[in-house]
Image 1 (spheres, one colour):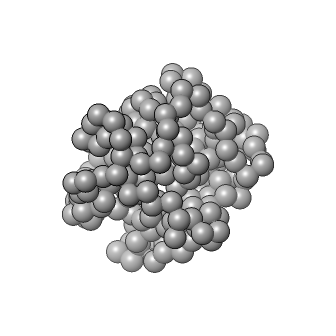
Image 2 (cartoon, one colour; image 1 turned 90 degrees about the vertical axis):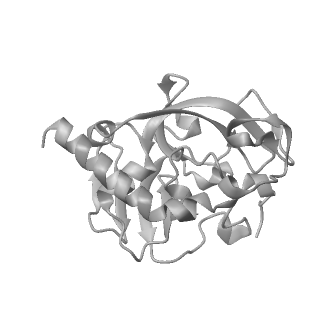
Image 3 (spheres, helix red, strand yellow; image 1 turned 135 degrees about the vertical axis):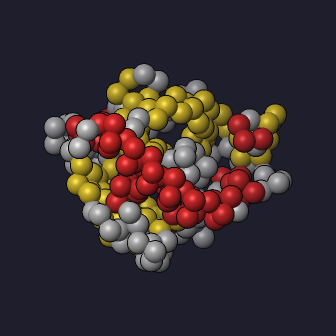
Length: 230
């Protein structure tokens, strides 16, 4: 299949999937909340600069499970499976051949710090989902990292256009300590909802908790509602 045909297929599938979840996405608290809890002058999307309980940092603290896998781009693989019509297994060159998205967003960690205006480059989860074609039964995803981390995200959140699998930050390859070669980011949720060193995305018919959710963290994780714990 030529690159132009592949791109056309991705775009068509993306639009179809986006339309399927459009109403749910527009009704999520991160979009529809008229009085978000935060402080500072309005930022992107009309929100205050940071959610309540957060402080701004210029540094990028490193948080993990005590494991930092050393995964080369040659060894890296991404599996997309579960409740999908077309399971995927992507190597690095397959991943980089997909439509690439540049975006600027904020990063809110549940441990009370926020880093603003980070420039990312990566692949929209929406585009990966479009290729995999989620079944009508799919409602959530579980993301897995090479460090055996896991976290659950509803599809109406996961398919938002700023949810990316990023390989580049501020024009440089994503560092290993921050989840390189590829991590997921969820700008409208607390950052633990994006797996570092991501290796698998499993679509699920229903919800179940991931690593931190099993330990009392929120299933929904909305920063603008101070939604840290279940």
